[in-house]
Image (cartoon, rainbow, N blue to C red):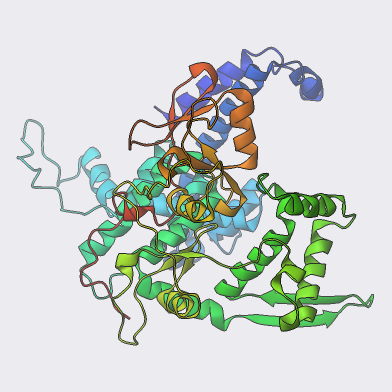
Length: 510
């Protein structure tokens, strides 16, 4: 549909809502009279208008950038308007931040980068000499048209122009995937791999915020290019630093730049201590319940608790036992690695595989995986072709720790659509209710849900269903609505789903 037509239809629907068709000063009071259904419908229409406007704005920002290229000099569009760059021009018009203007220009340039296909179409439509004349046949494959291959990010371009993703989601995916790496492999294979990854992420974007999409895109890039993952890790490791200073009021400050591994270790440390305040699982021992109650009643803010925990950790060092400092759950970073990927090594002897953190799916290169295997060993989890680990029956009410590991590997976090809660903050839900349906405590009949969505499911009549080894689906209360297929949140799910890249035979090794 024409973008402007779609915007007009949405504006007309909003104008038909009498509570919204009022002068601006009266809008808050009148909007408060809307029903819940009307509020949701209006929000969806407004979001659609905003996304349509953002698409058009990005395209025009790209056009402005093309007309402001350096080779145009002072005759470029931005320069003629008194601006040093197209970003400055866009920012002056929109009144937004420089970061927003830079993103609009970046997305717009990407939309206009079509590998020359649109340029040929435009020339033909304008009656170019290359076009077939009236009554002339184009031939079986339109021989007059140059063979211009589409760019690798064409799936993102199409998804944005079709309205399936927003400009922010487009930018998150493209910046996360980076530039296709063609070293040591033929260019067509590399571009195809990145294109398939882009298409898969665009399909997932409907249920994910831009912040989560960029994390997934980075993880996919590291899967596609494990040698590059090693280099990127090394670059971030070299930038680690700690700087301390005292301000004019005598307050001491510090600025800490982490390397990847220690950043996740510190996050694990803080999460372990503050999980009860942040909505961690409810199914705990009485001792853990008492500790959680004491933490909830603590008058300190979360930031103060985190600071005190870090200071206690530094002071305790190796002299204290883990439970003295960390409480019931000792922190650590659990990595998920596909077993079949362990083996090939580069010229420096490093694994060319990548691992992912169980919480969040952040990527670690092969050298870090190697060291973790050396220091801590591994727990092997065998899954079938659908990613389902083995069953252990109904001997106990709760899922065992080893089952929880297997669930975390299969689900990657809370399976509820749009939720990005990591696995360690989730509870295991029995698809078949344990008491009412005599549900088994089996991996293939359980899913991970965060506390909020687990309670929402039980209180409001949602159901998670599964037929045999098929996909888990979420059914709204009373069946009022369509079932939603639940997908794993783990970036390693390509091991049992169709993988994003073609076979990486001959991929670069160093």
